[in-house]
Length: 236
Picture 1 (tube, rainbow, N blue to C red):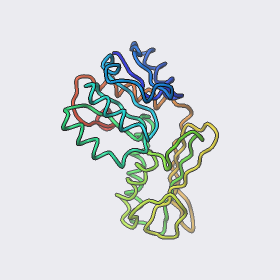
Picture 2: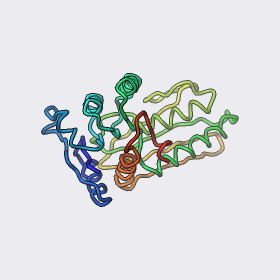
Picture 3: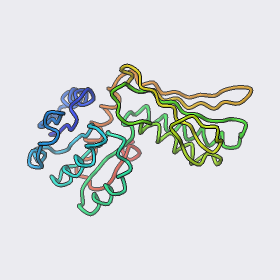
Picture 4: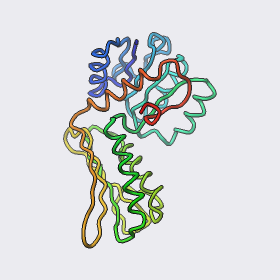
């Protein structure tokens, strides 16, 4: 399989290593030096594109892939305010997109645990829930896409929580997401339920970027020959 990597930073380089080890070839890499000049014709050399750039560039990159008739796997977060527009464009152009707030298999299992725990905790109003996410200092969006996914799962299951906020709150209807940017942390997410008598928490620690990169390459492999809008539930 011929792969274009859009966003050739630390994650892009790990994706390259894993893709090559799995027998694929990298035919195009896009980084900060050519991000504004790469063309649709260049993209056409690829069978699939993997997009891990920055929020400000993601939608434009996705549309270039649509124009090139190249399926795109999107790991960038922070652009989901345009998600419905992108989905509609994908359908109208009969294209393919696979997007996820997190491509790690472990994180997607963590999502299942989070959803189940929130469902159990809904009947126990003595507990308040809070969410913390820690990432490296280079991450541009806050809260992380993974944290937002976790928060939305909790809001769906716990009736008193109506929305999430990214700041301290005394409003029991709001779910606080604490965002920290420290060193080179790949990603840590913790959900904590606290009462006057005890505390329950679940945490996912990413030791490195390999889990995210492997999931993205697996998604790219799975996308071959498919049209439509997909996510990790489809892959798993």
